[in-house]
Image (cartoon, rainbow, N blue to C red; front, side, top):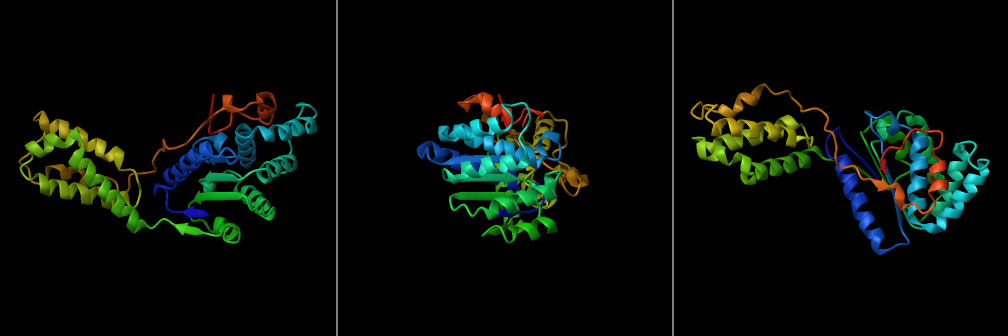
Length: 288
């Protein structure tokens, strides 16, 4: 499956939700394995297709002890760790692991991979294996080269509909303005709170342009709420809250805290597993 949409529309949040759901399923069915990788423009360690391959192998090996002999074989092929694995050796090991169990792979933000052409070639190669027990989810912006590559590789292509996203954002803003304690002072002190609330909702919803980045901006309204409660802002001035009208047309790209991690101590054969990173910096998406 390929999920695509504009920056900030919630692709990473959705992919993280999928990962979390599959991880929970894997705790029930230990035969299944899940692996994921989040590409990121802002982190050089999260932009390499080769690091992605190594990360997938590392995660799958950590899930299934039956895959550890495959890591042993990779270690031996690399002259007992004196050199790093080639892409062909990574292909072979990853394929062996995938064919040994039902496997779910989630790759987020393909468009943020530094060597995107190589990444798309890797995905095409994996598709050629015809592994019936492999299930994939890819997310990215809708870029032509990605579409040209994936349209023949995936069964389902799903665009994130901006209209539906805008409605979701509107529901979220309304909920926060209604339920968040920080806005209670506004309700008490503002002469026309319902009018102000409606104007705030409309301004944030339109300004978001289909992006799930309203938390930061609601935070600014919390500051305004504090100013009102302290008497630092007039509550009589019509549409006092709409001094936010000078806000930019969009709120920029969000920083996602939705990324999932796997702990390296979950791997039962750390020496073999860690070897595949011997010639690289620490791998993105992991923490010890």
